[in-house]
Length: 227
Image 1 (cartoon, rainbow, N blue to C red):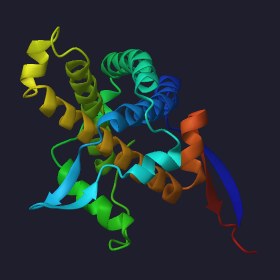
Image 2 (cartoon, rainbow, N blue to C red):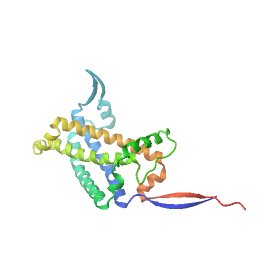
Image 3 (spheres, rainbow, N blue to C red):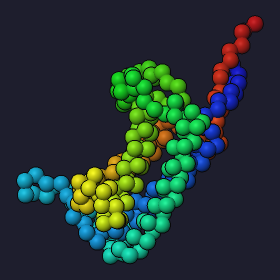
């Protein structure tokens, strides 16, 4: 038995560029957003008048050493917002003109097939569902992330300039509602990061390195006939 290596092309340079640029930008946006949120940490989950969970307790901000840094947070947030905006715009344009969106957008059967992917990841289903470049769950998740990015940008602008962009603020139901939506989208981004990292770990080294160099190296096994 001897192995034979096969090069499988995975991700174009542009996709890898947008991916690795966007990750630290979003991380910095979330970090600076926490600095801003500390100035008015008002959101919580309640049952009646009983607070079940507060976003976030004082100890959280103290542990990270980020209390009362509103001006710094706003400066960082609005600075990196422009990088987030331009990187996102160029990414979407690239998807359209390169036709890469065909691999990314969900298909008619994607929601049904995504359930099969989840069952496989949970080890309930034994056989791996068929997929092209991305599986059904990835198509849905990555498309939602793009929409979340658009939502975060628009709600952020509605919060940043509620008077100058009063029409945009009105569309989101006013300043308070725009801030809530912006906050919820941030939490969803954090959850996406968590799930994404777990999936990368489960998928293995080849899946990760393909996003760095653009291809996977698969080893095929060849059995020699015994004489």
